Image (cartoon, one colour):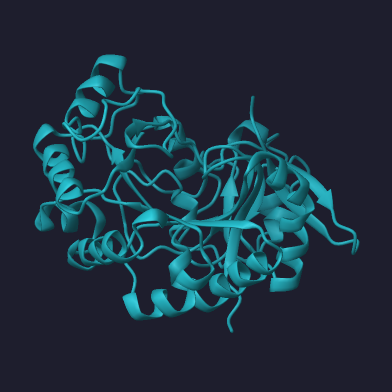
Length: 340
């Protein structure tokens, strides 16, 4: 079983499923969404991020770099096509302006970290959520972690884009997962391909199977990206699909532009068509209205996602500050602290 890269283990999360949770963010994704809120999750390998606000322009990175990829005069600091990812610049930086993104955890090591907050899971009805990136790219590893968690009676959840092979998911993930949070972005297949790089045929088919066979475990979610997914036509088509499948709950996830600094840190550009502001209250109400129907009450724009009807919830992943936690074995883990 291969061991994937994980770019964040976020403890104390209240936005990745019910209760207080630990969310594990895998690196690697099989979609290329224009609006990806976790751009550091797209590539499967370790990356180096540059955080300009910490830089003291000491030139230590430039002196340490064996390929001359680090240049102090470069505002992005790293010439990406010259960087071999060796991490010499990270080791040399005294100000934590250069950081490695991604590390591997053997299953036992990750489990030790996840079970540190078991009392909080039990007290709050929480648990552990596997996210990313796309955790189903690592079926064997993810399935093993979920199985171990269920052996400890921990509630398990997965956040997925739905672009996975059904038979492997059914055999490896489904026996050990309590909640499947699956994104549905666009109904038009050509628009879906243009915005994510793949067809939505497999995603819609997997949604149908989950809705038919495992409806109590499924929470369909719709990212609300102005100008892309958040159009009246698309939202009404998604709502019609949910009704046809008999789904009685869903979550609407408003666009949050605060992720753009994470793209800059790894040298990725942000599509200029994306908004630089949060959606307004009026816009959120208009999106929510597309999902109103006679079978369920019109949900609150700030209600819980885990309920009948469609609730608009704000979701922000992995933009807190890091802290160091030492487990009982003495291993040191870099984990994410929650922002107030």
